[in-house]
Image (cartoon, rainbow, N blue to C red):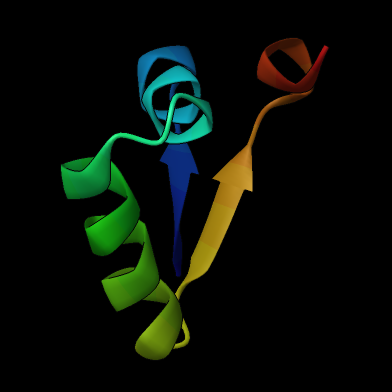
Length: 42
């Protein structure tokens, strides 16, 4: 199972939001997939 990240979370991560990036790192350490949609990627 994984997380589908919405546009706001991806945007905050790209802007180096510390709280968001720490949570994403925590999820990665647990080997949980972080996914984004094609629309968010574009």
